[in-house]
Length: 354
Image (cartoon, rainbow, N blue to C red; front, side, top):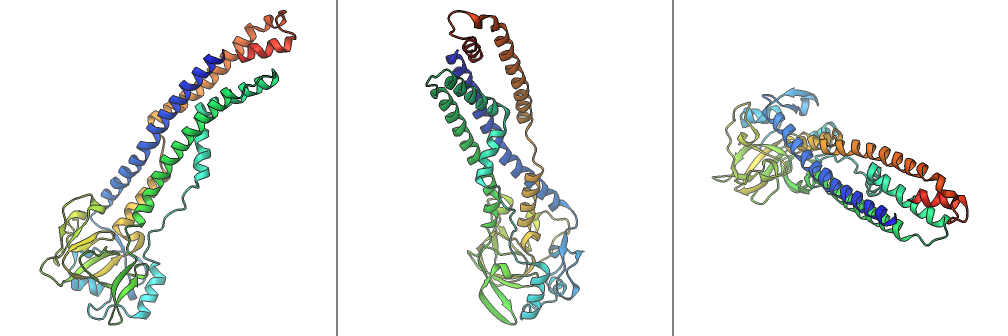
């Protein structure tokens, strides 16, 4: 009977391990695809809501920086390309729009991820089998820790693998945050500040972008300082080819790849030099929209159809195993009085173990 129980335990453990690698792995991919789909939907909208800065106040208006000229964009943000924002104005806008950072939700602690691995019905069945096996061995005065130890070891390995997979999925948000640079070259009060913390940028700030720079915020190109200027937008769009930037406005309903007059946060300047005016910071950037999509998909995430079927199977299996055990034990109750057992309760324990 113990060998049968051990084989059954190995079978359930293998099933649970395959479930973890099947359900958890694709969940990270589904979250990423869902976030990309939400971002693509937002990009196809004819009008995007942007934050209006300066004297116009922090209200949401219909403003398309890629669909207006560079001079109109500067006028909208009430800033001069030769002077930049004033120090006092920059402080006021910092209070209105907040810091230029991607807000990341607090991640689930590792210990909670580990505990959640034991919420599965199949895992709970195995834990019950281990506890019952050890308890019966103690009652009979036997050294029966080997089988429970093997079961618990299998479950711990399975839980550690599941925890590692889920923590890897959570690191996707941290990867987006790492795309932001630490500093930027910004024109403030007529003076270029070459090491201004990127977190202090606000809409209306004038930036200088050079080869190798990581763009600190979404910005509208206002002046090309070299013949050509291009950026690598692979981290945003997935495209391997660099995108040449121009000064001319584009169609109002242009896709993100077609907004060639904008430099996006998190992308890298691959060629040339240019100046640009910040049009969106933090979570209002295109990268911020992707992050919000990832967070929303994570909050709305449901188990895959396979996961739901396995949960239902676990419920049915629990009931079936319980009924079978009770039936087998009840059938063998008359045999507990046989002389081979020194006492009826020992016979009851024996058949309960079977």
